[in-house]
Length: 298
Ligand code: RIB
Image 1 (cartoon, rainbow, N blue to C red):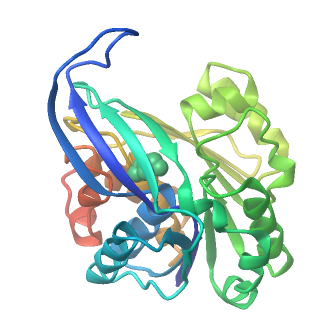
Image 2 (cartoon, rainbow, N blue to C red; image 1 turned 30 degrees about the vertical axis):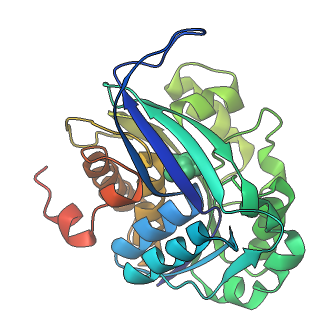
């Protein structure tokens, strides 16, 4: 029952606005927040809070942000023993706007996250071989993610791939994985189809065992093996900040799967976790515990 996450650690600088300004326009913010983020660390914390043993492989700068990040992870029970310190780059940062609707836009300055190379990942081949699940995103160099996927495949470790942020050149054949988690925008980019039901049918032919498409508050779609597409409705909530909801989903899902929970139940668990996460500000401060998820009224 363990998950290894290889991914980014980022300091999020979030501005809450009524709406994003147009070009040349200035608007006033309602509030701002500096918090811990990065898809890798968000997913690692979500998997940990969902009750699984998690190891996070990542890179921070040799700066006060990096030190604070380590303290924060340790304080939340996430091991920092596989974190590298870059002497070339600063800790990654992100600049995020969240509109009144809860919708967000993000610009990432990757910084130290660029230092995760295939050679570095190679140092952890035994850890990857031993774990139940390897969980990946795309805020570290692409060749490193590809390398991690093939390393895991060679030792039969299950790979859960969340290729976010997705690049126009993304080709799933280069990223051997067992589960592919996409949001509706990413699924459209990959399949060329706007309709998520059509999209999942097309993506279902790519040879990945399970494909999941999340749609914010809309139904989560699952195409498992060659079965018919199934739909799960996440609980309805009032969204105040959607940053990190996809990461909460991926981390909680990987945790449930690593515990041997069936994919359908794992999706329901993760969907509830993601719904809870949008009711609070910030990425990591909003991630619920296993107890909160299990006791959430459905
Ligand atoms: O998925 C949300 C995350 O994306 C934020 O925490 C931000 O750091 C960006 O990487």
